[in-house]
Image (cartoon, rainbow, N blue to C red; front, side, top):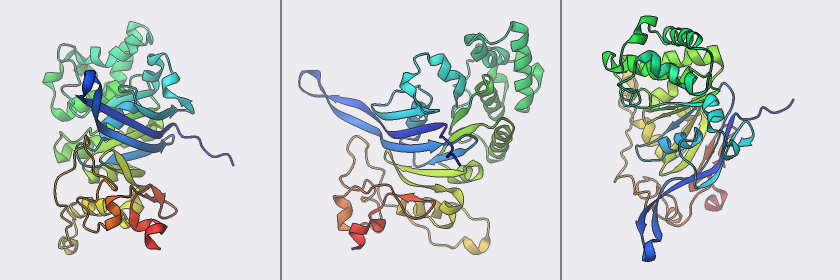
Length: 328
């Protein structure tokens, strides 16, 4: 049986932003926002990307849809290098994004109908009448009414505006949508509605998602696989069942220990408190980037940068605790 090809494949991608100038104006300092991320997303699959603010999640998502160019590595879409798609409009039809702030991502001077129809106009899809019909269908698909098309974004609540963002992302019937913390600015009850809507749409359309969030419970609800990111690198990658049942990396354990548990008997479980702040990506620590905060750090961690290696049939972990050279 032929192995399924990834829809999107990230191969050691990097994004380094210059922040300082040396002699003769030469850039001599860089923020390593993303520093060697590899990831595969298959058709119909949701991969969750979770980690603290500033770890490089959103930058990774922006590179996937072509909004930011990587400074190293390659991104493949359906087996072809993303940078070889010279016509950016071709990318836009297949790769879309839902942004974190549903208000700032919508033009306040445009009606809802014009906002949703804009991708169709740019790609010259259908006649004006056909586009209007498509807008009405999309509004109803995300739980709004067709008459909402004549209104402006400021007339909607935060949850409704995020529904509008979803409708706009769906306009061109893409194959993958990057969801950049789409529920973090919403109330908890509204978060559940949006997550359920995204799952329903995925089932109906066979979409793939890269779902970015710092709230690990939201990622658990919607994802098939979860990648844990720290300081520009993926440090653990597995399916969601394995991650929550048997987390391996000390950072992942700390993240999960902070999640409130509905079972009263589990509420007194040990909480892992990480010391210190997230190091600066402009000056990351030598060796393992997590060793400055790790409760089980060893002397080797200060000088050896661990590789992302298999720790079970389903899991990859970047930690020296699991490398044979340390165990021996």
